[in-house]
Length: 613
Ligand SMILES: *[C@@H]1O[C@H](CO)[C@@H](O)[C@H](O)[C@H]1NC(C)=O
Ligand SMILES: *[C@@H]1O[C@H](CO)[C@@H](O)[C@H](O)[C@H]1NC(C)=O
Ligand SMILES: *[C@@H]1O[C@H](CO)[C@@H](O)[C@H](O)[C@H]1NC(C)=O
Ligand SMILES: *[C@@H]1O[C@H](CO)[C@@H](O)[C@H](O)[C@H]1NC(C)=O
Ligand SMILES: *[C@@H]1O[C@H](CO)[C@@H](O)[C@H](O)[C@H]1NC(C)=O
Image 1 (cartoon, protein in one colour):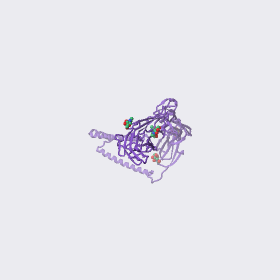
Image 2 (tube, helix red, strand yellow):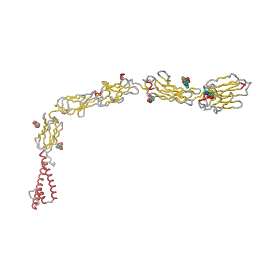
Image 3 (cartoon, protein in one colour):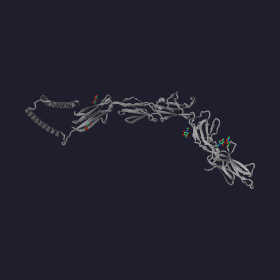
Image 4 (tube, protein in one colour):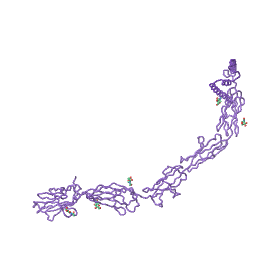
């Protein structure tokens, strides 16, 4: 509850006309609303010899613009009295000290801003009067700034409203100053207008509303605006600043950029290409996309993005985008060029397959049309056999035959690759494997010996054998694949053998000869020696004869008993029995018949086997 009364001006002396009293008052006393105000009134009687016996003191007030005064206090040697029924009844008191007296007003109101008169009357000792203007101050509330929510266009010819600022309930009237980036904005015709609306409310407070009209430029998009309220307080001027606000500035596009957002790097056929257009205008305008060669054909786009999917080589070219917020003829546009790269399927010459003669030369080519530099590698059986788009095959052998694959890649765009192939067939007469033309060997008599013959050639050779010296031979292996025929025979060595393997096709015949020298065997311990062998045969014959004799006896015995009709087969007997037996037997018969059929079939099969070979 600090009482703040400041002496703004040097005290002035007031001299009354019949000057025998010296009276001093401040010209003004300043005080905050609601505080107490002290108005001193100092006086002294100039004639020390004539001390007054009676001193009357009165206080009056006069409102601004009202000439009549109203007494609010009276005192003399006998009494002190606050006048009743005034604005000050019950709110004032007067105290005295050495220098004089002092009027104290409690709970100062805005209406207390008026002149207070102090009148001192000492009758014969003289009288005097002085006055003080009481000033009351109420600081306004903090200023509230508000920027226009809509964008402000730089195209507006005159200053447009950008913000408003309000300071409420101040006394006396506060001022509002505008700032842009901390620099005060002074009103300037055509650039800055400040419109002030001052309202006084019933309680006497002032509310100031200031509107800033400003001619925006593009740079103002980054500027911040603020307002400051300034107001008097006892003995000083105070200021309070508002928040900063920024505004949305609308300005036309002056430059447009077009670029490829995706894919990164080179574009190939089938890709999805995304082009993005961006200008420096605000708000971002819509764009139209077109190709350079057909500027009038608008491409379908969404906002600032043009999507081309899937692209082909004919989509290569120059693309443009234009903003729609500027005149068509200002020629503000973004431009970019891109190429769609491709790699066509490989064309291999010769096509599919090619037959060449043994010893011949051949050059194969593999070409794939591409927009970029390609690199070609030839493979055969998974191994690299050549580089470059031509492949030279010289002095063809059967090893030359096979599938040749050329792989074409684009080193700068690895996603592009293709391949082609050619099947090479080398034609020629049979060629037998094995270095020696004639194979010589020795083998013990009675042993089996394998002779092998493998022939390459195209068309595939057939192999025939010509054996002299043994009737006992057969083929154990006979196989062929697309490159070769292989035959192995097993020959029993009975005497010296001369064998020939004859491989032949349309292109020729080649023969490989074998000669086997039979070595007679003399060992007695060998279980399969010829001497031991004849002994075994004799034993077997004797055993057979014995078995025959036993069989004969059994057959004779059975015949005598009448169980088996002589010269008839078991089958006939069962058939005969069928007629005399009941149903159960019939079933048995059926089974037996089936078994017989299986048996007969097996026998026939066995017989057919050797015949087929
Ligand atoms: C002037 O003041 C007197 C006393 O306070 C009052 O009666 C009168 O109505 C006032 N006149 C005007 C014009 O305010
Ligand atoms: C308000 O502006 C007026 C006119 O420029 C000036 O006289 C006055 O002193 C200002 N008041 C404050 C509180 O700044
Ligand atoms: C104001 O400035 C802030 C920060 O710089 C920014 O985020 C905001 O978008 C701006 N507002 C306007 C209306 O420009
Ligand atoms: C001959 O070849 C056949 C089939 O490969 C084999 O089973 C047999 O053991 C061979 N005989 C000899 C004496 O090598
Ligand atoms: C090999 O076989 C071919 C065809 O079967 C025949 O013309 C040729 O005379 C035979 N050669 C020999 C040496 O047996």
